[in-house]
Amino acid sequence: MRDPQDPIAAATHPDPYPYYRRLRETQPLYFDRDCGFWVASGVPAIRAVLESAHCHIRPPAQPVPPNLAGTGIAPVFTSLVRMTDGDFHRRMKAAVVAGLAQVDGVVLQAIIDEGLAALVPAGTADLRMLLADLQYRLPAFVIARLLGIEAGDCHNAATRVAPFVAAMAAGASGERVEQGCQAAQMLLAMLTKAGETPTSAPANLTITLLRQAREQGLGPQDALANCLGFLMQTFDATAGLIGNGFLALARLPCGSGGLDWEDFVDEVLRYDPPVQNTRRIIAQDIMIDGHVLKAGDAVVLVLAAANRDPSLNPDPDMFRLIRVDRRLMTFGHGRHLCPGQAIARRLAAAALRLLSAYRDRLSLSSVEAVKYRPLPNARIPEFTA
Image (cartoon, rainbow, N blue to C red; front, side):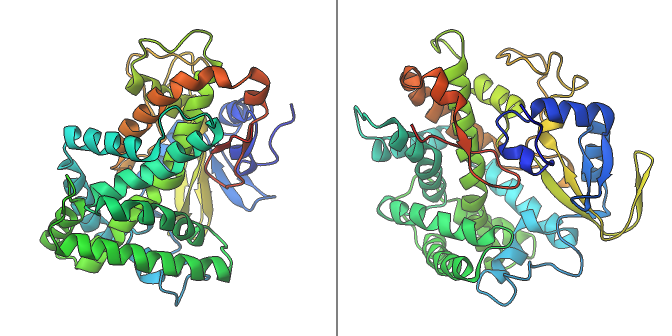
């Protein structure tokens, strides 16, 4: 099998992991002249970048991508904790972490069960439709419900998330951005209602985040933007986690009976993560791993390569359900460490537990023929058979 063309194409390659291993072992940090950016695949280099105050999410002079500037999405983008650095990021991240810490695990599981009952018809025969429902509709439904949106509106909210996420993608067309703006307006209206009016939802993370943001001296528009951000962050990443988890189930040499599903999800996150890489921009000249990275340079951090570094996890190319001190880079590291990982794990575990009854529906040939959505950093299988 040929190597991927570059670290970006690797995310959708049938098996990028031998290529990642060679990068990690021979070029843990190098400048790719064809792509025009630095590539970090070694754990020390990735950690150094993610820990440096001089490595930012966005170019300092361009807080909003040009195709989003002046649109209705721009104010949302500039308020997202995921897309910011500096003092605003510090305060908004504190609000987000405090808000998510108040999510009750029993309530979350009840919402997941509610979503499964609402979305998954009993005795479904169409595996492809079931996978699509569990990959995309279930996470959107659960997060919407967790945010306090009424059950009757959650299906509508779930359909709006996809166009919003598409508009946020790098280089999205004007038409997609316009569709995303319309979706964002509708979702923000639902979230505003949830934040202002007591609902019958079993939880209301919107009200919690509004309160936490206020305590950090931030406005309601910042909190609502990050509620919308929860829906966005869950969409592709959880779809990839559930899809890659189902592939791992299909390839298991034995049955799935007696599996510890959260351990299984954690090993999928390590072995075949839904987020393969992330990117940083150098704001000020910095020395990392013996290389000078200059202001304005971009760095692609191959998190999937780091997950299989033997210094983090022994026997990294083996899928092992039981690992002592399993360590992941999938959720990032440092100040931008993803705070929603517990919710993602619980969601994926519930979906995969249900899917385990259908693992015999996929033949080995259909598993090996799976294609991946053409995305630059996410690894999301598409099941066409």
